[in-house]
Length: 231
Image (cartoon, rainbow, N blue to C red; front, side, top):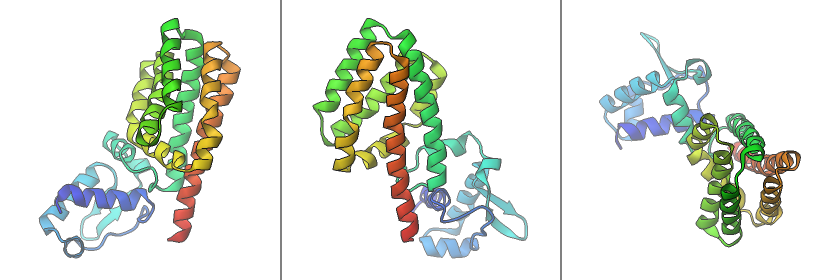
């Protein structure tokens, strides 16, 4: 195991809620023995995680889990975005999902104002791809559809925020649509959303994107809560 492996393990324990703000880490020699790495790698990893806002080193007292909401940096956000959404702490997932919903709802509103004939053609292509795909191709098609919605809104800030969620969104889609009942229930809404956007019907489009994202969020959140109950 290398230094980055130590960082990944500690980030995972913090973001999953296994370690909470204020928890004290074992001494470096114990962590090194537990993980089978050198003490120097543990030390460097702790320093890196402190810079990222995940840990707090107190001289002569030890290393503690920091509250990354108060100590976060752009690196903290990057780490969160690249963490598996099916292992993340449920309340954190809900907060990030709410942020995604805000971005996509506003992007859909803008899309109804700004969509062009070329955008409509491309949107219909993405919709057809959803209904002709299975497995990983379906996951890719669904992500591409949502990204295209944000792109049609033509707000650079929203698109950059959405793309920073890519890893988490793809994982959430994979978890949600691995359930056959959820897939049968939710996929028809995409064709309805495409029609609403083509008709520039902002009210219907907003209702449908909220239905799609809200259902997905509730399902993934239920999986996270169930995992938490089992631990």
